[in-house]
Amino acid sequence: MSKVRDSPLKRITLPRLELLAALLGSRIFRFLQICLQLPSTIEYKCYTDSMITLDWIKGNSNRWKAFVANRVQEIQNLSDPSCWHHCAGENPADLLTRGITTKALMNSQLWLHGPEWLSSDTRPPSEQMFEVDLAELAADEIKPMQCVVTESKTKKLFFRSIDGVP
Image 1 (cartoon, rainbow, N blue to C red):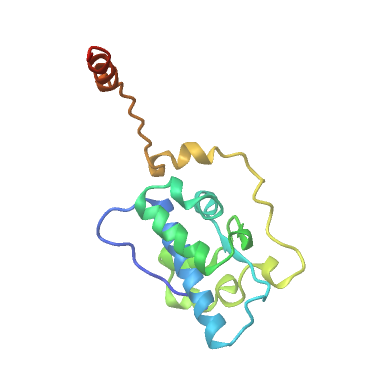
Image 2: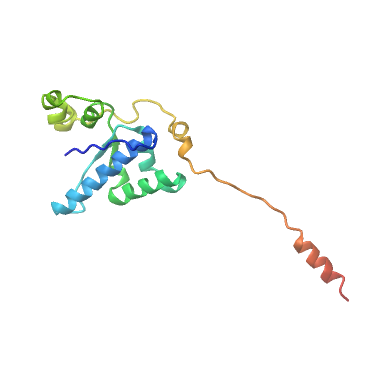
C-alpha cells in the first residue's frame, strides 16, 4: 500500500515532511490492524529513510517543539517506537516524489515489488552504518529551556521588622 501527499504551500523542512510520512504510515498500519482484526501482539516493523525522524520517534517527545512533539506523540501511541528502523535508499515512495512517468512507474521493479531485502531473509543495512550527529541536525527542533533565578529580599525585611517589634 502506498500513499503520496504533496508538501504544503507553507515552507516546511524535509525532516518534518519525513515525520509526516512516518505519521501517515503509522495511521495506515493502525487502520489495517483494525480492519483486518489483527491481534495487538502481532510482530511488525516500520521503516523510515530519515535518521532524524527515527531519532525523534525513538526519543522523548517532550523535548521537541510543538509541531514535532505532537506528531511524535501520535506515532508513539499508534506504534511501538522500538519497531521503527532505518532503511537507506530503495524507497518506493521516493519514486513518486521525484517525478516519474506512469509508464516508468508501471515497469519499476522497486515500485511493484519493493526493495529486494523486503522479500528476503536479510534486512536493510544497520542504522549505525554512518556516523551522523543527529542532535546537531535537529537542533532547531529542540524546545528551548529557560531558567530564571531570582533572589527575594522580602523574607529578610519581614524578619527584620519582626525582630524590631517589642
